[in-house]
Image (cartoon, rainbow, N blue to C red; front, side, top):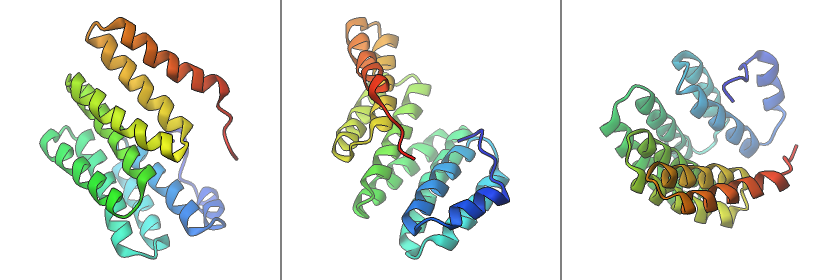
Length: 177
């Protein structure tokens, strides 16, 4: 997503989609841009707000993006609590896939801070949801995170098992248009 330029032509293409499709694309872009470009993140958030008919839904989606921004700014205590709050609120709204994506962010957060048991815990929780959602990309990301955590803890057999789960999924994954 970071290589995607948020251009007028992209905005125009997005506007042709349903509300849910627009929200999914804009939310994904905003989460990625939150780590790199705060001005573009604001522009995407404004677009996201304009297409989201439910203000509570927008505020909850925005909370996850704020967590990404806090994480990028190395505000660890605030980022962790904001990720947890965003996950809880997304789950309450029935936004299971997005809640799992926030769990993935939280597992990555813990991994970057050397807390590999927490990384594994949150990645495994995300895997449960991604299995229910039949989200192959989410599964690949989280099995890779779990494998990396085991590797960094010197538990190589478990690392290999989880990394092979990710590889097996990559080999059969076919992106949908």
